[in-house]
Length: 98
Image 1: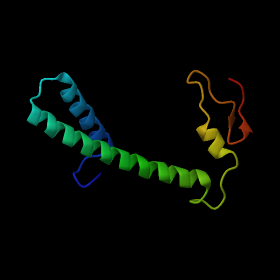
Image 2: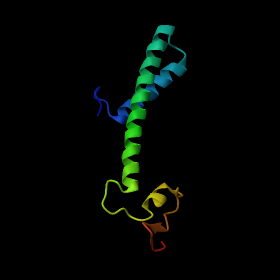
Image 3: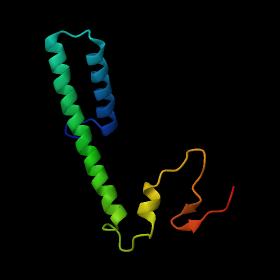
Image 4: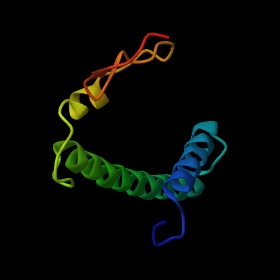
């Protein structure tokens, strides 16, 4: 949680709500500006949390957080897989066919 007591997910949901209000066109100028300011703050908070998470993931994938990184883990983790088809290998080991 952050200093305002919102989790990342709560901040993101609030940001989506703010965007919907702005897109509705029902706000006067002052309300629009307040919503926009809140949206910018929420967007920055979410981006900061995502950047922190990305940095942690990159450290883990580079092996800087572990003594012995698993060969090929970074490439396997970054390679997209089809949602209807399971990967054929996991950490360099061939998986049995279904």
